Image 1 (cartoon, rainbow, N blue to C red):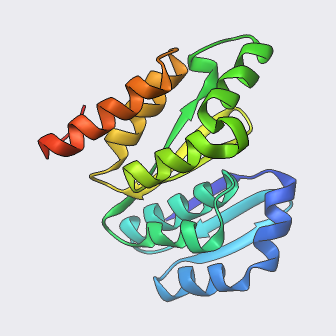
Image 2: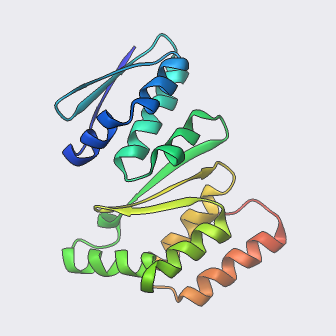
Length: 169
């Protein structure tokens, strides 16, 4: 089986420098090659191919090697939320990115701490990488922010859900 992923040229250059990532994928039975800005993954195992694809997608979305490689574990996943789903205006999308990041990155840092997920705002997307059971909480929080909720209300919701100890969303 084979999978092709188109990446940004900047991230391809960083990926080419990162030989550890290719070694990790090779250990899991996936061969990777780069031609221009297209990464081709091939494997006999559909499951290993899916995990490797998630790693490459995460790396392309701005996550560091140490974060992206977590996706080779069964209990980690990635979720990508497009800002175009919340506004078609480029100016408004920039404002939405600012709301998620916050002043000096404080909102994003607090979201990451409270949800246990890594969050990247890169291009026209907000990406969440973390334990499978934590991603729905992070998605709900970011969706609330993108829909205009006050930050205090978002963190109150996170704390309430964590206190309830139940699955979210």
